[in-house]
Amino acid sequence: MDVAEVQGGGPTARRIVLGAQLRRLREAAEISRADAGYSIRGSESKISRMELGRVGFKERDIADLLTLYGVHDSTEREQFLDLVKQASEPGWWHRYNDLMPPWFQDLVGLEEAASRIQSYELQFVPGLLQTEDYARAVVSGGRPDHATEETERRVALRMSRQKVLHGLHAPKLWAVVDESVLHRPIGGHRVLREQLDHLLEMTRLPNVSLQVVPWALSGYAAEGSFSVLRFSEPELPDLVYLEHLGGAAYLDRAEEIERYSRVIDRLTVDAETPARTRELLAKRRAEL
Image (tube, rainbow, N blue to C red; front, side):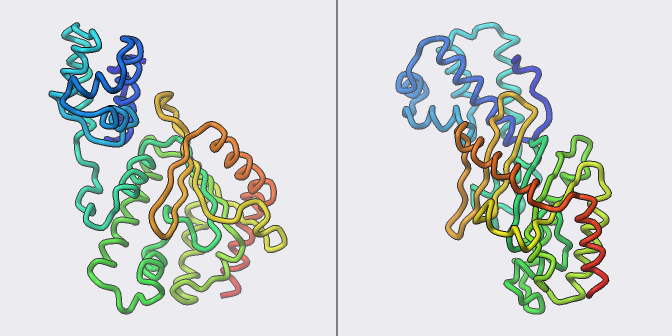
């Protein structure tokens, strides 16, 4: 793929695409990572991180690598360096960087680049579908009346993330939640009622689908929450995102993607259909 064809997707996606292009050029030139690292006053591990798109790029480094890899055409070099500038632009979330560990910044960037997001939640409504009050209850640990300024900024960040579902190139969100989520009174009954109303509204969008796994089948297909992010851009591999108390993990090996894809397929079979799920949401809403 020509570098000039890379459009949209935000800086995270561009960084990954650029890294993949650099790896392809290095391998075609039959140059080791160690030698490439030496040429830019770095190390083999630095080249590895660059090729995986996990670090930022300096124009000087990329220019030196292009020369080393035999890319001398001025137009092609300019296209690469333009992509470096785009990949270095801060995302809209940069003002929340003090609240976000690096692994979460990657998730926000990848959500913008994804063509499809499949998620499974055992405990909460997925973050991309939460109301402000529900998010505040979650972020504050169930104490929204004692929300701090930091809590409010975290809520604002979550609300900003949701804009991705309404953009021109909005991803398809296919969420599966455990039935217990509909009964867990996060924030109290009023907040839960409003959250259920919001889910009914959001599932009217053509790019949002929601399914509920009934009590009887709960816990069989998966023991924890996870998301699968898929991309239309061929340079971006599908990813599985797993969050835990100490951080998060991104899985991208083919066998890992296949394993979680089978799980999400099983969950969508075990769960009520989207139409039946809307009926359950309305019924639960009427009970509150």
